[in-house]
Length: 314
Image (cartoon, rainbow, N blue to C red):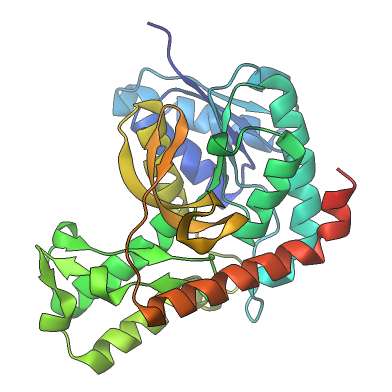
């Protein structure tokens, strides 16, 4: 049985970490692509040389062109300019839209049957760009957002309670940014609602820290943005797709009437399978959650509108 083939576009911190995690999980052979001459080749060779120590039977290839990515099963787009302190994800809109446009054009030229996961920021808008450029069926294109945001939410809950993080379940909906919607009602520890375990004010602080999770890391790093957690989130999605695990995960997916939203990519829980987004999982939201989700959707639509002229030309 032949191994799966995965393309990672962008060999910076997020892309290189994604490639390494994919290899460590032996999810398939990885092609790491970047425009910087020799850099992806060097990183891929370094990872290859770790294989005897790790006992890995996968290949990693670095490239500056897309020809070696031919017939990939999965494409993960991480390319883009990272945030600097004081910047929001939205500040990256126009420059990263052009980068994602070019990357998507090349990736789909060589892998027309692939599934695409977008990681580049501002995430939700970049998924719209990749969808328009690729012209793929909507179930084969998605964004990494909710898995990361939910992981941060879970992490902060576990830190507050000093409990095992594996016992914490939590869910974040909406756009990947300041308007994301961490759902307090659906957060629990071994089935116990967090409202039974953590005072309300502490929960509100955790929700705020979740929303500001990326900015907190940017401020600390000063010269870049988060990459370990985003890469881990992308790989969790990749594993569910490549192994047809049908996991229920929150991702940026196309809505066609679900949650009262039509014609928009935004963060919701979905079933991820070998098909891509197998189906959108609809959960009941209370009035406050609905209002917050609508606000998040409107923000995503406003970002997409800003690059409307570019999208209209595609």
